[in-house]
Length: 327
Image (cartoon, rainbow, N blue to C red; front, side, top):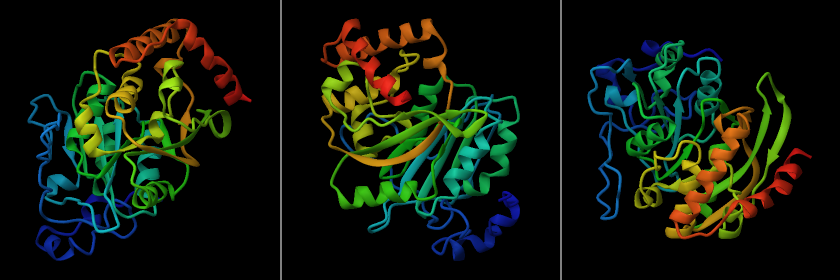
């Protein structure tokens, strides 16, 4: 499927109001349920994020766009919660289009898509512009790293539930978001997570490892095992209460966030026994011995800062689980 031209995919300005409630383009998951009024900002007393519709003005920004910049917004509907998918990227021109297409081609039709780019110079911004008719909001500017970008994405989100899809990843099928939405509607839980396949980055059909963590609990966290972060979708209210990703972590802020949600927020959760995300091999945490050593140090710190004891010997207990994933 080729992306539609942004001018032809969107109605002319004087036609937008008549088309908002019917949707802009029936082909995409992100353009079928839209409104012309911005969502009300959160007023939860324990909210640790400042809600944003667009990022503050930045003279060094390389670009910004999407439906919101044209006065088009999203909200949850009865029995159809708005699901926000956030992608953070930096110089991801070789893979970002796969991620985008896997989101906008979902069959569930109340999806909000936010992309935060760290100031790419490899053609990523041009791809974002090409797809901005189906992206709610994107911006490209220098940031403080992947977790800072994730915090920006959460602040910009208006979905009832929020998840992250990395620029190197893609949904495993077109029913993924529908499965999550159905799960949240059927069960009164704060979070849902599922399985993930790690594949050869040159051959997406070649599975290198299967990640299937069925529980989120103190014992598994003590040994450094958590559900795959790109499969983890959580109530926005729970994330707002927990607070931002801790950007003083360089590799394991996602782990620290799950420890915080599990131990301090005591969220309820459900495991969805399906492969929802395909992840290309690689990444900072898998880039060598020193990176793994640093990762384990940050895992120990994350546990201890949230009142959960662990040590290097306990972390060694996760090795049999990793071997089983390879098998």
